[in-house]
Length: 408
Image (cartoon, rainbow, N blue to C red; front, side, top):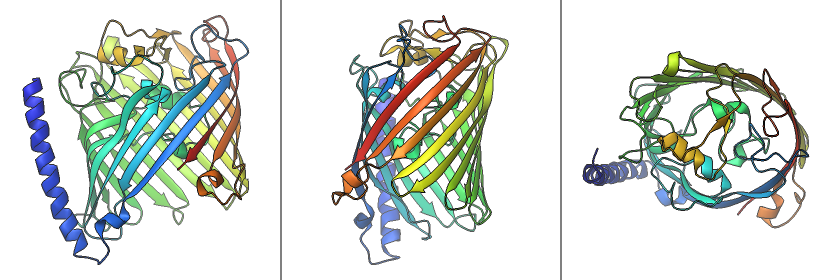
């Protein structure tokens, strides 16, 4: 696709999107007296943290992309969000979400070709999500939602926005086993009170349109199904993403599969289980996968405790790596020779993380301060079959970390 055709297509898509948005707003407004704009919200989140590692490894805390710098404070995110969630109770409704990031996490969350080479500093810019959302009464008992634009993946128990994560550090599954974001269309059909069906098409993993925005010329399928059981106390999401993902390669297919189950065990306990299996056809086949188990216990309104145990296998040593420069991950995804990825070879990884969620000012009258969250944790990583840590000299890694985030 040429730059001219990309621009033309973008203009046409914007016109069509604006027309659809106007039509849906008109239809939705006819169903109630409230203004459509009354549902629009804005917020800003600030997050930063530090990961202490007594070994002070020469490149990074191996296995931890977003908390990779040992013994240094990291400004992870300034996250600006404007959104209007759709009302699932209405037959017709429309909404949107725009989320912008400035921080060190952006090094690993870029869409290719979108703010990815503005700076080579550790703190970078990123558009996390940018989509329109439409609610219709079509097909299922609860209707169908249509998401059009750029959005985060269905897969995994952890997310980019720290408000959706219990721990500061991320699992191997999140770092290496699932996509982060997609550009395309995603439909969610609420078949009945128990079953949701997801189906969509996109440009691939962390990609968009245009010669710089996609690392190959092929699209991908993203979909799955959700189950809501035990009076919505048990929610299961099984999802898959299928398509070529390697640079300049339209034939070798990557299969990214994930099942997440969240079970509310009464008022205090929550169990989350994440199963993951991935395969890429390249080089005769590259396999990876494992399981992460989480438990969280609410002690009171300002304190909770959690644990995560994980087992993840990189069979051929294809997936798990560290990236020594600030643009190395993006360049590697793009197929740029400057992109350096340093792997540990075939290995099985385990990690055990213990942490707290603390609201130190929960009684404050100033709402942002009352909602401030501090997340201290201790973590132990171990690699079988290879020395993955401390510059590939040790098979154990011990870290002590903490972050905070506050929402305005």
